[in-house]
Image (cartoon, rainbow, N blue to C red):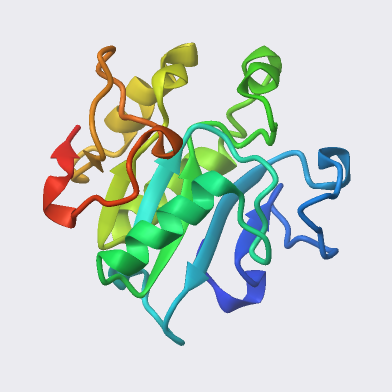
Length: 183
């Protein structure tokens, strides 16, 4: 499957396009339980090689029309750094507003589709930023994704004391591209 196409209008949810408009106030139960990718182009026809990819922990309520605080910060950085768009990926594709719910889910990864999306997008993107926080240790998922990405250069905002890449919500907005560190 090609992950970044106009046909999907900005997101792949549970393997299908989202079929309804979702407002920020919609209950999460009305939204597909898994989201593999979410993206925005800042320039019409932007190619993925000119886009920044961010790998977070798990998706929440963000949709292509309404971004949540985490995705909004990633969008800001991608624009600030001069990219033509951004793609949001996640270690776990299970959507939950509280990471605890995702951690308790019986199959939060959404593999094989989620793994395929992470690898495909990461190998094509102009920049890949890991930003999943400490819970990336769950199921040793952060380590598994780093291994699956092989030779892809993986950067992050900063490493936490645990060695995991810092989550965007806990990082200042003013960060230069040169400030990123290699994971």
